[in-house]
Length: 198
Length: 175
Image (cartoon, rainbow over all chains, first blue to last red):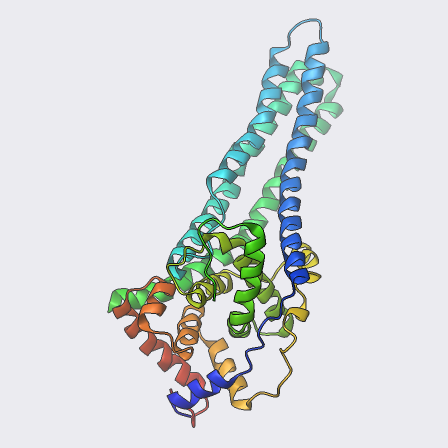
């Protein structure tokens, strides 16, 4: 097979043109909207869950006869992770598919690196504020006075929660994000390395 | 062939999308087959490409040819494609099933085409993209525009990709 024969075989293949009716386009558009709506509601659920926790905390604070500054601090700390995550999410939109391959790959790499960084530092921006807020509640409510078993349970629960969330995030980095990053970097490297050689 | 203005009403987008996919649906078939190994994955990738074309439609400025633009969107989608998670499949399965590609198995194909696709699939993703564009007889200018390389680099890069492809083809075939 010569180069021309290959091109001929290629050109003669059945193109199987896409036959779209308005109804099919409408279904595709609806599926796209439904998917985006799902993403929106997933984010909204995170927010609502946080607001409920904060609501309870603030309601409890307001129900007290005196101001408990430790609890106020705990409530503020609980607000931080969600706010930070939302700001970061907005800062890095999805890569544009209509750019050139190299630009798209660079954008995709930057996005994956950003996600890896985000999950790698989850203990600073998510776990530490939560752990600190639990500690503040613990101190404010003088939980240690309820006995050693209670204290151990409280601390143990905090450690298991902390370790579980940390491990889950690092598992996602190791099994999904890092292989994806390597693949994207490899592809960009393939495209660019020969260009630089020439 | 109609082009899409910068700002376009969604109803117009729908008819333009239909028209473009009828005209250039083959691009999705070819890219899907070159980048995904089995039928299920190929369908998944085609769904992703359709979706990306639909979502990127408003960004089309008319500067590039429609087919060039569609190739760019499809190759970008293929290069960063991952097998979809269950949830996304659930959303798009009904909307973009194989019924959009009814001619997929309508005619028996040249057995040499399967060999060619087999060789393309063994290439690295970047080589696959370039070889596809070359088999489509795209100009260096088009390939440069799609890939983001300069025209002079495209020539060098294609030569190397062709050599790699030749190595994966049976001995009687050469590129």
